[in-house]
Length: 487
Image (tube, rainbow, N blue to C red; front, side, top):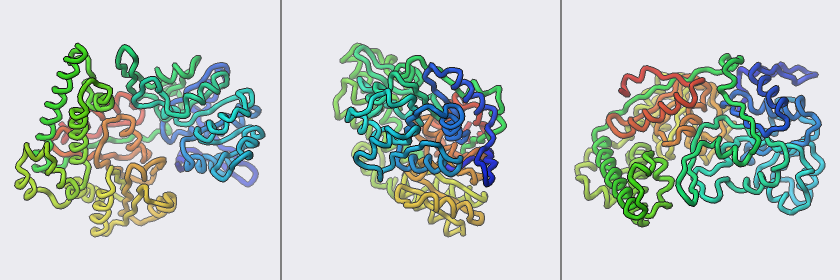
């Protein structure tokens, strides 16, 4: 994650101090006032969670022995770079990097005042039993929302967090997250529950104090949030629309069959099962239905996802799927099927009218297709996928490229990236999770975000629901555009 332009560093040869914004000072003050409480801090993308981390361990609590966890080795390196070079360094900082092995790991935990590590490495060392909670004062958890399973039974937490939270139960815990407004599914012996992640975190972090984005409304927060304008561009394809209608009908009839089977087995009425397609899919294998029926429903949902997101050439083979083949005229469909993905053509059209464009798509074949379409029209293109070795080098090239320029990203490629230099962000296909969609659109810091949807299909309804959720949960940074084509 690169520094946000609006966070001044005010560095000179003798000092790396920087000004702290009013909302950050508010958070720091609240944390200091609640030293005897566990803390959850919700601070949106690009608003300085790393700045808070630095201030907490250097200025607010310079004697406190902190463990700071980050989710991956790449985040470890990036955070270390910020703490040591961007912000001026932390006295007594130890980094449990991959090259620290054997007894040196435990030694680093004993001797460092502040330790930066991944949860799994930390748990592996602590399980040896040579260290106790008294060796530490506080645990700071980055992306604390990710410690919760999206679907959980007896084990609601992602490993190794059950162990770590038990180990640190008597220590001070601070959890930082960009958002704490999602839900997840929990199975108890009596029933299925859909819980807000805050409710679950409060169970595992007792005596917790929440500092949320809502609380910061009376500070200078709005000065540092550039609104994101959300627009939708329908893409017309009669043959894709016709296929989607067939799949929609098959999904609905299969869903009704699932409800009937559950009602016969448990006595639950249809209304007691979740209406959300996403939630039903998540709990599918916990329901008293046959594996065949569960696979049929999952397969249909996946086929519809492929239809809306995959390259047209790649999807052609799914027309021969037995369930589809018996409900459509395959030969006619094959004759009319587009050779180039309609969404890719629309992305090309939009990118040609912008200086710097970021394009997000779920599939590598679409990354390649859009890249080729733009190159033909003279656009400077860059790809960021799981195959990219040096993401920062590619981003640097994109930033320096003469317009028009575009970077096309897959989900793996977009991870942990911020792209404030783009004036247009295109999302080619959406998912059902509001938080994931919000995180995608926040890759650019404000500006215009365009969602591509196939006109007159269920994808339009799905996007409407997602946009409603985004506006409800993240009102501080989201603004709806005209949206006249989506009505």
